[in-house]
Image (cartoon, rainbow, N blue to C red; front, side):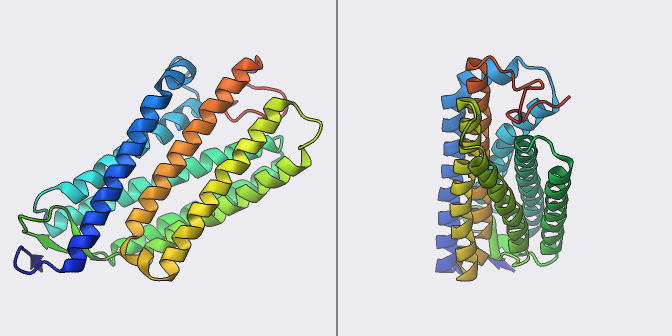
Length: 283
């Protein structure tokens, strides 16, 4: 099926306009955040060794730009065919899920470090992370079989027009939200236990984690509500893209702030440190 300037459905035009605006806003937010933090990024990461922690930082920071660029191309490219749109959906979805898994994995390492790298806590956290990552990937792969789209030959409306986003894609969001909720409560519990008798650096480390996950939990609640009322099915890729951008921005800011505070306290978070204050004590 093809739609052109003579059979443009009004809701399709509205949906594509909203999608374009949101993705432009996402790209603008990422770019602004990059400019605001570029000096700190150069100081604290570019000169550091290529450890696992450093690699995770760059994946989180610049992977989001790749996602945003593909989203913009998907909604601004002129007269794309169904096959082009399908392959874009396939690539964007895979990168989106991968990016969210990288962020959640990084934060899982962070929470594990907060708990002193306890083996039992680590086993519990990584089992949850692995299960949710597999489920998120599974739901995405299954959603590819139910992708619906049509050729766009319109000279008025650009981009890919999707007649329906697979509901199974919501399962990917749900799986990641489940693990995100788990590590939020693990962070909150540790923060409560160590609210007294710890250094200001460690308190900031815990508090940042709690604030980070409170913001993400609020966004997740909005997303789940949108899915339940039906709006999230049509705009689910928008919901996932917004979540991805917010995750990237908050995680990058938190990591750079920890690095900045640690330097003020003569603690190098890129190498092993006392207590559980470091995420980047990885080879």
